[in-house]
Image 1 (cartoon, one colour):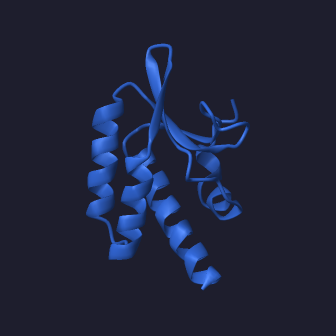
Image 2 (image 1 turned 90 degrees about the vertical axis):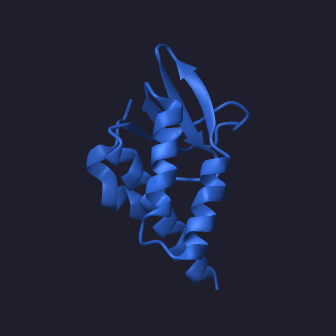
Amino acid sequence: MQNQSNKRNHAVASAIVQCILDNDCTLRHNYSGRGMYDRNCIGYMTDSPLKSLVSITSQIMESELSDSEKEHAVRILENASMDNMGYSSIIYFSGLQWSEELAEEYHRYIDED
C-alpha cells in the first residue's frame, strides 16, 4: 500500500511541477513559507498568481492522471498559500515536498537561490 501511495504522490507532484513549468513560472523546490518552521515545499514565482493557479488546476483536470490522483492534486492546489516577493508573488504548497525522483526529473529547472 505504501508503494502505491508513493507512486501516486510522485505522479501528482510531477504533474504539478510540469504544469508550473508549462505556465512559464519560476519553480522553487525549497520554499519555506510562513508557519512552516523551516520545513520546505514546492512553490513557484509568478506575476499573475490567480491566473497561473487557475491554469495549473485546469491542466491537472485535463491531464492523464487517474481520478484519484486528480482529486489528490486538487486538494494540494486548494491548500495553496501565497506570499508577496516584491512585485511578484510566490504560490506554495506546504503539502508538496521535493523528492529525489523529482530532482532527477527536473534538475535543470531548479533555481538554487
